[in-house]
Length: 106
Image 1 (cartoon, rainbow, N blue to C red):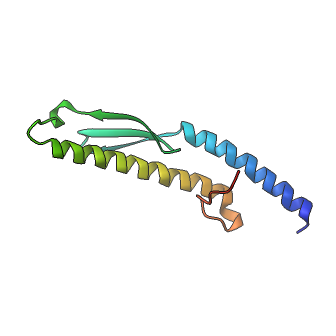
Image 2 (cartoon, rainbow, N blue to C red):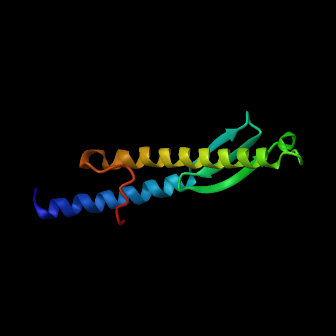
């Protein structure tokens, strides 16, 4: 493969990755814990957008349970966002032998 062709492919990949990153920054995922008692929403650039707590989940005598539910919802939504991001970015790099979250410098 000649150098000009490789440079053109790299530039195209860079452009496509930037587009995909912008799209993922707007893509939201949601995860609930405790049968929907606590839910979290995040974008696929790993930013938490909201946390909703059902008032029935608030028990002043069991704050630890609420903390666990919030933690589970946030952990779950960030994992789902990361998984979605890796899957979508992997589509761009699939033919190049690079993983989806390759962290390329562009």
